[in-house]
Image (cartoon, rainbow, N blue to C red; front, side, top):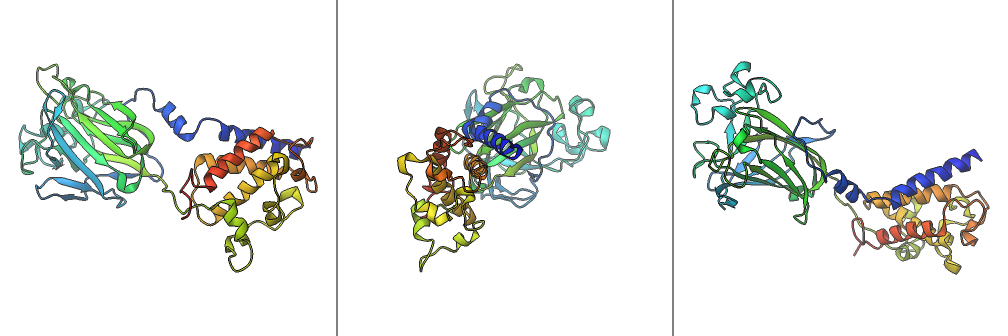
Length: 394
């Protein structure tokens, strides 16, 4: 009794996952509020764009960067704000070495790292102490360049946008970006994260860090990011009466997301490739020959018609096909994983010799309704037909 109760509870819990919010909906809900710019914990397996590995285009400005784990190329560009809500088109993304001494002059001393209080060249009240203390050497950073030539590397005072295209990596999960020198009149600076369809996933406002202040903007582990825009300064006229938005960025932390691999076949393929000259060797990877408590082999059950809309048989067909697809190397999705886990919990709860496959799911030991099993079968059918997951094999 305890065994069956445990398995029934397991089914209910997993089925709740399968029939509840999708991962995409959960992400949307968690990202719907306003972001908070603060320090964020390092994600396990994360990598960073440190701007130490990059390429320059023919105009001298940078066009691609690589992460510290050699992920890339990641396309980059930057444009200047030319008028309120108006931006130029020429790429002026540049690399700035923040380790230079204070003697470089007033043009860029507010983006030097670390602050003079910590042995560097940085000057400014924001970085001297407190919440936005600039106490670590950051080395190379990215700026929107002031001039039309890459040398000298001075940050642009009137603001603009820095753009990052992660499409070569698929999509990524964004954790944080380090930003230098957001003054009070530059409030409105922000980070915007986009999905593959240019849909806005999240928008995070930067804090005012003050002169030479350093902040780590927490991007909340936002999944499915294809592009990122870093907007320096407000879109319109700043409180100081001009266009504003100087500063620099560094240490963009993200994680590559698993790409879809392989492809899927329908239950028809698997029935026709179980034996004989066309046999697919993946059949040999199934656990044993008998399908749980049905008393039938996997293949015999696949060849059994679901009379009277038998939900057990319908689900078994799709479950066997999906299991074979996974063993052959096809990627899954969270929705498919949940459906497979719920189906496994259900089939495992059937006692040996119970003959549940002959019923229309009305036996006294049933752990799920016919409607629930039908929904699981439909999810796995969509997976096997390539409508979700990596797609159908040609």
